[in-house]
Structure formats: C-alpha cells, structure tokens
Length: 253
Image 1: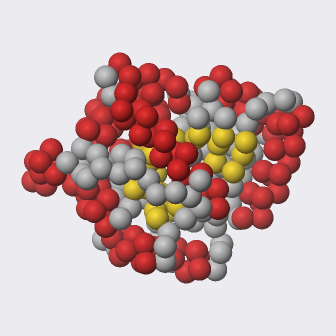
Image 2 (image 1 turned 90 degrees about the vertical axis):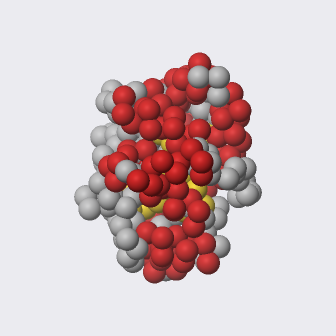
C-alpha cells in the first residue's frame, strides 16, 4: 500500500525530532502494510518552509538507513504546499516537489478558510497540466461548515486526500462524520496518513481502512488505494462525478 502524505523528515517541520525517531516511524509503516511513502514536508506554511535541497538530502540519507535496517519501504519526494497567491510562480521556478515527480501535488488550504482565489489557482494549475490534491479537506473549518465549498473546488478540477485519522475519530466525531459524508458524495479521491510521530499523530492507516470496511465501503477502499497507486505512476485517477443530489442541501448552510 502507498501512503501519499507523511512528515518523516526530522527537525525540518512539525514532524520527528531525530533520525532515530524517523526510523521508528518507518518500522511502524511496515506494520501498517505500507510499502511506499511520499515524504511531504511543509512548504510555504506560515511556520515551516522546507526547501527542496533539504528534502533531497534527508531522503537520500533516510533511504540508506532504511535499507541498512532491512525495512521494506520505498521513499518518494514531495511537499505539502500551502495555498498562497504566489504558488504558481513558485512551481514555475521549480521551488517545490510534486508527488513522486508526477503531475500531482499536495495542496494545503488554510486551516479555517477557503480563500476566494482558490478556484483561480486551481484553474491556473490545471492549465499548466498539474493537478492539485487538496490535503485533508475534512479538517478545514470552512468546509466543515459548508461542504459545498469543496464541491466547487473538485468541479474546477482539483482532487482530494482524506486522512486516515479523520476516519478513525482521531480528530473528533464531527470530522469523522464529515469524512464519511464527503466520501459518499464522491468528493474524496486519495488516502494518506499525515503521520508526524508515533504518539499524537501516528499512521492509523490500516485502522482507517478497517473503518470503511466495517461501513461496508469495500469499493471505496479499493478506489482509494488504486488512486494512490495511480498518483505514483502518474496516471489519471478513477473519479466519479460528485453526487450533487446528496450535497445540494449543503449549499444553504
């Protein structure tokens, strides 16, 4: 299985504090059934801004340590890019990594809002041949209050990434409920752990999939894992039309 969203690099953002801690997380990945993982440190975040060179250097060292420890885990470069008015220029200047060198990149919205210019940014990236994958939209406050905001971004061409811990209830019942509703409305397309450590922000990757299985959403499990593979392979995702009849009631919230 492939994890599209992780913070494994040490002392660069709010992820691990040491290489030793990172290696423990890598061991845990095997227990989760994860065989490949995209490293996505924060970029253009108000508090963290990890340069490509730092990602490349640490990933090279980490892959060597993982091989030395016989951990069956393949690493890929990436970034979690915060939405700003300048990110299109930053992409053209090759300042951040797409996901595994594909035409997909991980886009983080501000925690509490969906800026008015988000649709314009998405259209511009689509015009450049790059597809934004919106990270953990279920945890955005504005989308929680009005999920139709996410629907509009998906209609513009963005896709989304659901976080495992959101499904398990790690971020609260409200986030868990919304996660399932967004999934049922065909507004969720890929899946990631957003792991930061093994205590407060662990993988929960397998547990999130078990939750969907208990809800009898086996097709959703297959779809999410297949789309994760397609991101790595730089192939078109399997996407169903948003269920507008299910979401129309959200427009009046």
